[in-house]
Length: 222
Length: 222
Image (cartoon, rainbow over all chains, first blue to last red; front, top):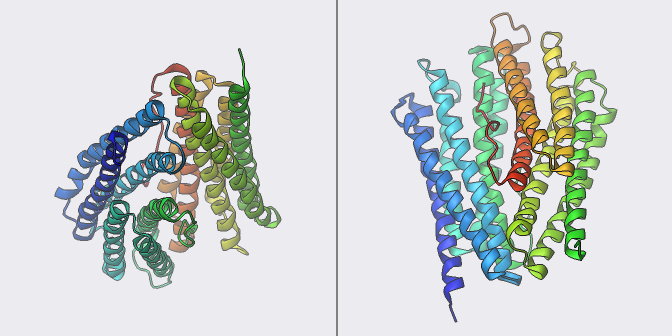
């Protein structure tokens, strides 16, 4: 039988999915600014990030309230504690998107991304937004298959990040150390964005199956 | 009156402080490898990181057990939930130290850090290790003054990171885009290490005072 407690859990899950959806939108807007050099969207990202953070605080307070007032155990406790972590990861995804937007602004009026690596950043942007959408539907559905797809998307992001690094350090790189330093950081933001999506997917997977999902995660540098 | 529950909380706090201490040691070892180019220490970091992660899992399980079996409320609940976050932050600090060690190895047999920025990385290393030690004693003591000092140390780290970026993008930078790209990432690892120390300090501060500690946190890029 569903009771008030479980209805609150359901709405918590809906809010977590909503946070992932907002992180996706933030990354979409930030990436469009980065790839086009049009800053009108970049300026919106900071305000939208505040909304995401506010939602995160609300989720945190609600999860906290459930722990304090309902003292859940077993599976229910796992869901509530997971919610605390998932909210933090989704909030961090939003922060990383805002870093991408700030990088776009920092490089203005130069085109933020030179032609030689434009395709790579376009791929990273699509991969990041797809991952955030996929993790939103993973949270919503609790589907272990989708959680596994998030890990696959992260593997693709790691490949793109390695390829970026390789291109930036080629002798024929013509845009100097400043652009390389900037762009490697932006690449790192995308990579970490994907890592946090994986963290969320892993938590959902564990919640549903009781087993650990292998693969994914932070690969240093390069 | 102290009871078994509070004894478990005390040992949880001791373990969290221990995790911060280990993160400090990891960063000390990784930084020595980075600054000297001697890789013998760098190889130890991966193994030591596993110990830290294992300790983190143990803390997580214990905190979880307290939630499930004791259903703490009010201040006690805050302490237990904070422990979950602090363990995750300290574990991440260790991971970032291991990234520094891997960067030292990746640049081998070149000296990992060219002379022009050696002083900066030496300062970042000292600042990072001091911050981790300070946050260890903040966790141990619950001192709001120490928590504030952690934020000050983080501000210093942000200054160093900005200065690093400025030097890497100077026209007289002679080591090319590859070294710049590598080193800006290493700088980012130090900066994020400090950010996680701040996160821990903020949680302790809130736990003790009921107020938010302002200042500190992630500053994008540059």
